[in-house]
Image 1 (spheres, helix red, strand yellow):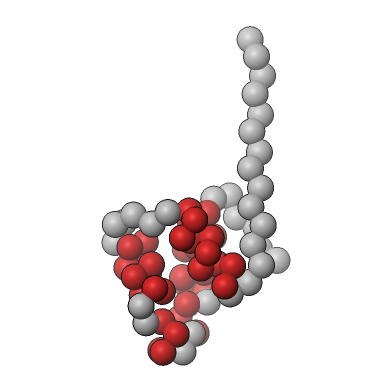
Image 2 (cartoon, one colour):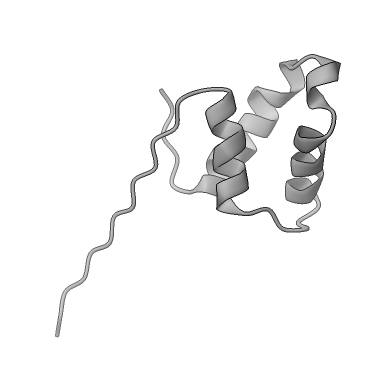
Length: 70
């Protein structure tokens, strides 16, 4: 299990580690568009990154917010 501090960090790791090993026929369409959008900073939503990550493994997203009033 790997842990990340942001969805972008997790998706970048996936693009570097998992994406290259996928068969060429799988990389067409949605995955290529996501790779291009992320790499060229065209904008990719957290929901879209999470959807792709969940297709190739289990993903658990936790949000921690700490607030201390004055």
